[in-house]
Every structure is written in C-alpha cells, then in structure tokens.
Length: 149
Image 1: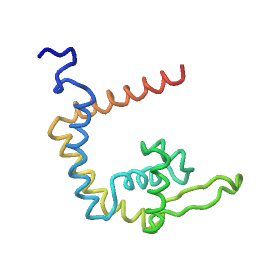
Image 2: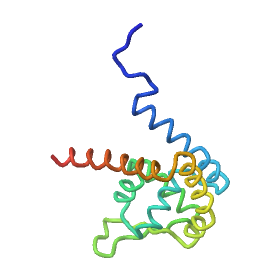
Image 3: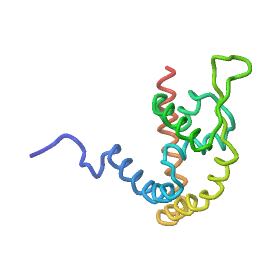
C-alpha cells in the first residue's frame, strides 16, 4: 500500500512526541519522588521564574489549558506550594505566587532536572541542543505571528 503521508519516522508531530517522551521520562521519575506532576512542576517553575501572576498568564507560560490549571492550582495550594490572593487593584482577579515551600521543592529537585537536560545535551551535542531549542522557538514564534495576522 502506498501512502502520500510522510513515513512516521519523518513526521514532525510524531518526532516531537518521541523526543518529548525521551526527555520527560526521567523528569517524570524525578518528580514522582517529589510527589508532583510535570504540569505542577511547570506551574511552579513559571512562578519561580516570573513571579506572582494571574492564572491566565500562568496557563499561557506553562502550556496548560485554563480548566486544567484550575485543578492544578488547587492541588498545589493544598500542598502549600503556592498561595493565592485577590488582586489589589481589581478584586475580580486572582494573583498566584509560589510559596517558600514551593521554592524549596524547586531548589531540592532542580539539580536532578538539570542533570537530565545535561545528559540530553551531551548525547546530541551542545551545539545541536541549542540549535534544536532555537528551531522549536522559531516554530512557536511563527505560529504566534500567524495568529496576529
């Protein structure tokens, strides 16, 4: 049977999924020991990196859907890894902030996370690793530019 589709080994969506699983497998293992999911880790990392913000911005930066984020924030708050408060200027808005406990969790597990990424970098080479990140960021930038047109 002849197909007009590219072979799955050359299909970008499948290649991205395979690469994601290769990178995320060891990170998931590390996070399961910490008692959090990869989505919770992304939220904590975004808050640690960019500071307090509204849930909509967290969802955007952590690549999550807002309904999923709502559940994730509740779990993180239950674990005392974040705090939530009303925005001082607009009481309808909520501001989320990483807690000291959340910061400590990141500090405790960041070395293991970085070790996984360093292993990937060593396997493909530092130059190719940086080029891959540049290409993936270019795909995202092109998509964002198309959305504004």
